[in-house]
Image (cartoon, one colour):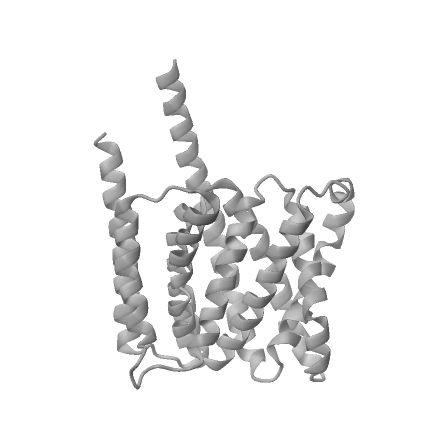
Length: 299
């Protein structure tokens, strides 16, 4: 009976991982494909703080009906301080990401951001006591070599603006770890904390750097808020169903979306070292995942 129960638990975990990966893919389609293009276009005119603040306020309007429908859950917040830490990390990560999208080619931003799953994996082990196999660590190490090739530290190809992406990586990883730790928190509560928190934290810097918004620009700004809010919901669903160390490699598929957007809308062609670095990253992680599955089946 114990063996059957263990097998059922394994099957359930595998099914949850597949569903969680699906939610994460939807999130990437909305955010990496749609929202990123809008931020790139609007970032040339409006400061990052202003974009994040407007994105938060628009997102709040979209979820007001959801807040009213789940108003009872809003009175039963289980982890208020952990939620505050999460949205503070998110505010830093999102603002620096918006700034990086404006300063750098989309593919470069996304490629350097590929180090986030590596950082998340390490943080998940240290802060959440999640287990990561040796095979996955080897794959992560090889993938990190690809990241170094993309960043090109100490060479003429190094762009100091990449440091902005690294800020996004660190604080984005911290936000993911906090999200995973809040798996018993209500999803609506987390969405409200995220949206309201972004608005509160970025309000003052947004006012200081504010640029008047042209009437025609409100439509793409509205799109940023809507796509971001839908993506946030999918993101939360994904990380409530599976471990961060399992979902982290799925994020590498976002390169397909941002490369296409950069090429079609902004005439951006990735440099050869970025392409090779991305191939190294994806091959390393996918190879490690394949070896790990084969090893598990052989037991």
